[in-house]
Amino acid sequence: MLIKKEDLPRVSNYEMNLIHQDEVEIVNKLYDALKENKIDEADKLLKEFLENVEMHFSEEEEMMVESGYWARAMHKSEHDTMRGKLKELYEKWQKNKDPQEVIEFLEKEYAPWLTLHISRWDAETAMHIGDTF
Ligand SMILES: [Fe+2]
Ligand SMILES: [Fe+2]
Image (cartoon, rainbow, N blue to C red; front, side, top):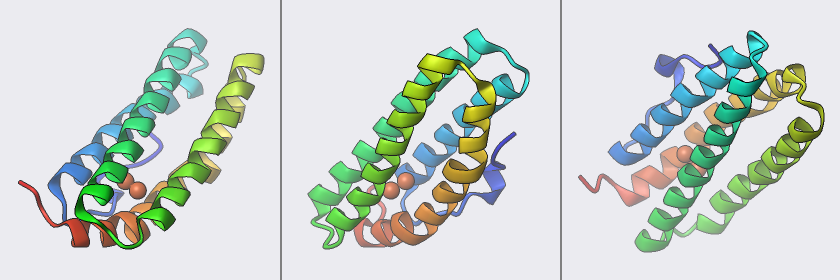
């Protein structure tokens, strides 16, 4: 397990919390497959994870546009930096199929980034957007 669901910071928007929980479920499955050296499974899960991240980011970006959140460009640029890193990671994976490379990235970059990003950017954005449900 890479990230405990209970350790994820909660924000004041229901939909955003759901998106984060889903992503953590997928990334944990991916992490376990990598740790067990299951290359084919990891390959499938990595694709699933990347699609999920893209959905996560674009949904938040849509919500920010709809609600006219003043700092949406800054929040989006944080997403874009991570998009770039994930693209690079996937290219390396396709070439090397090296689980260790992905494990290291998830541990050292993605996991700390996600926690920090949620508490810094998503939390503030959620307060601006409020709860739509
Ligand atoms: Fe988020
Ligand atoms: Fe975000």
